[in-house]
Image (cartoon, rainbow, N blue to C red):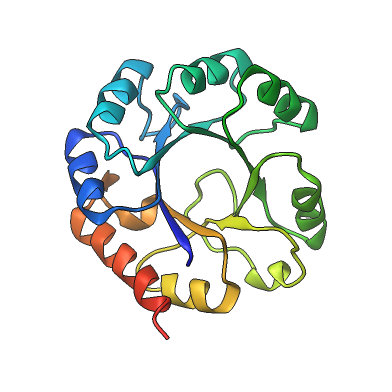
Length: 202
């Protein structure tokens, strides 16, 4: 069954919503340039309210590995998602500092980007059109990928079923597709989760 990640949560009411919807993962964004940015302190507060069965993923862009590892080792997040220019050396260094899972994001524009994703030593890869652009990339490029992946980029309740049925990704990751005026919308969150789960029904 395709797993679900609802990313960019920043308010207590967002946590209330996901505790009812029970996605597999949620995301906290620690990149200060993002409208969804949360501080370490706010993430700690939100994590304390989160259903323990839901994994919290911290999203970082070219952050110091020591800073990422600290949040992992303190239990503020359960996994780290690297969304910048972090290379293999960075991933390996982070994995020495913490034993928690690492997701490396790749911007998919050509088949060569898929090759790079295949070689990554991260525990998981996330395939996106860019750094939170909210647009869909060419899914035909995914035909030959040989490892499980998080699918991101332009997903919403309208195209989620098509994505799940045609690509069978390990997980789908959504942020802007569940927002209204750049804040999480409970109705859109619910519609997305229902769409993904309905896609699994034969």
